[in-house]
Length: 165
Image (cartoon, rainbow, N blue to C red; front, top):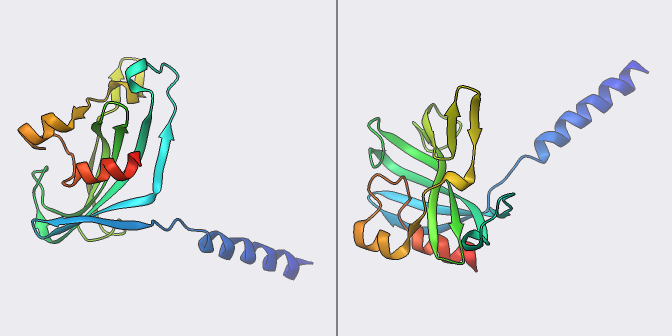
């Protein structure tokens, strides 16, 4: 009986590893010794409880950035890869950097260097996350002023067209 139990537990553990998440990465483009990918499996609709009319079709996607040598594009500390979540308003053609993680190496299995979360709201009662608090940028604003200080990945326009298609 004990052998059967051990076998079943081992089988359950092995099946858990077989079902690990595997991103479906599609190359968005290359810039500054880096490659930018979108995870096609990450694209999903976001439903807000307090949906207002001009944010009726929000979607979330994950962008992977991988660099051949350490960069400091939007951080003081150099990093070689990042995973960034974006939220796209498909109706008004706006995009927002939601959150991201930075890593020392090319994968998330390497040393984690830090993160940002633009949906965080803190007060004396605790920490809350509100997608409604995100700052959205229109394509025309981004083309005029660029992505400096916004944590948005390059090729945001291509990512937006994929997410909204």
